[in-house]
Image (cartoon, rainbow, N blue to C red):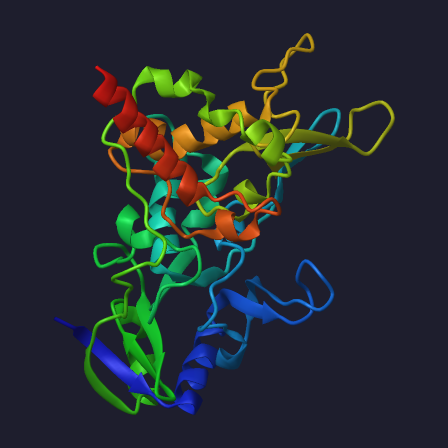
Length: 344
């Protein structure tokens, strides 16, 4: 059953965006023509917008929304010999447009940074408090998506301000945030109950293992990725639930007493991630790294928090230059698990 909603003509919805832009920064997927991997290809990635026409509602974004919460490089504080000054952040609130899989990914990010049984991450929390979300409905499944099998194709019980679907040259919006009621009422064509569209079937399917025997961790199934994977880390950087980072101190002076500390995104698939003091390095082989990433997404995280880390957005499959399919890896783990169980 639908909830209170509004129908807008394109001009009316654009006025809504213009009004919201006075109080919020609008962060949404945008089609970047000619800015893809090659000069003649396009890419859809997140950027700040001022008008509704800038928001890409049809194509799936190649990159996730997470950079608004976990920037690729974030200056935490500046330091001199005697003083430390925390980096200033933009105090304006942000409205982020995202799909159901990404809104489910937000739940994973909050779990890791805010609700992991320890103190919440101060810098993440400072940004998170200023961000609200807009759910973009999915009229159909996209290439490489497997959100249905991961249970992330819907976001009914998650927190968002309003939803948006573009249907027959009209914008259909379900409103949940009463603060925005006047803006919606003043610009709407009419009111009616609205249910955000969601995917019910994916072409790509995965079967998740109920449990994973220890023998999977030493299985020879991972060896093919020693040669297939090139360790570029693209799968991590497009993933909406990958959260690993490293720290960098950037010095302005030769004496090392003036500079800044940055938190920089890291990848478990690239060289240097497991380097330790004394020159040690764990998981040197790419197959070992693939095993680590896979088990974290469909086993370790669930064992701790009760649900899978992967949301089935399929971006890792799409972006991989070696055409390695993560959905296929999940199915291989399940098949290998059943094989081990049948041998007992």
